[in-house]
Length: 341
Image (cartoon, rainbow, N blue to C red):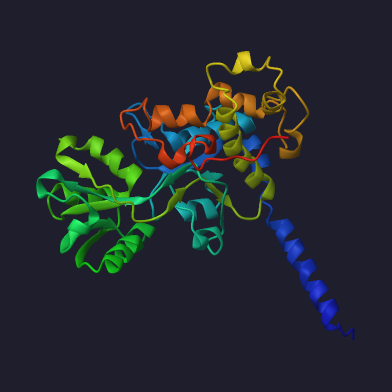
């Protein structure tokens, strides 16, 4: 009988863990290429982020991230299967392999980034939770909601943040909880509650869908940090890196002034950073398992981060949300990407 000393046992355990990790590699890139289509989890319907028209055409900030990944990996931003997922279903769909990536206005938290088997690749929208109320009620800030009934979706960070806010403010309130966001919103519109709470971006989105948007007010309070971004399954480092650098490419393109409108003109630039971004200098696609024009295709077919923000939720959209924290770091915001070099 062979006796293992503690060091040998530890080494054997490490080897087993490494082997298990290798087996766990899902090789998502190979699967996506073989399938010829990206499976992307999106919201069932949130204007500005992911919504389908009556012909089944999907648009939105998160939808454009799906398109950007498909452009980089498959060469065609149209090669996406959009999978509408509810708040309750979204993580299971990704964990099970039904999705290649989840791009569904989802908050990055430690629980989700560890115990739930997900890896967030970055933040494509810095958000925070807020309240919407009827203007006629007279509330001007969240501190005016003492004793109010608040409609909220259960099983979310939103519900926890709501409780924390009222506890910290030493105010009483009554939560009216619903499994689905649209149920909570309908209850608010039916005057079953005094306020509805979700991410501020979502509040501006649903306000547009109301019969009389001007009768409703998004309060100025931001009661939480809600860094929203795409997530992938743990265990496939190559796929994680690809999706993360799709995000970084969008940011770098905006910082360098490379847009969907001028990308072909910029391809002739002598600027070394632009040449590297567009695959005209060095070979940075190789390390990702992609060709050298992966970022060029993203910008040509989808645009840069500013293009995506503007047309979906910013000044060029119906929602017209100020970029705020989502400005580039060079403009006083938080969006910052490592260099391609």
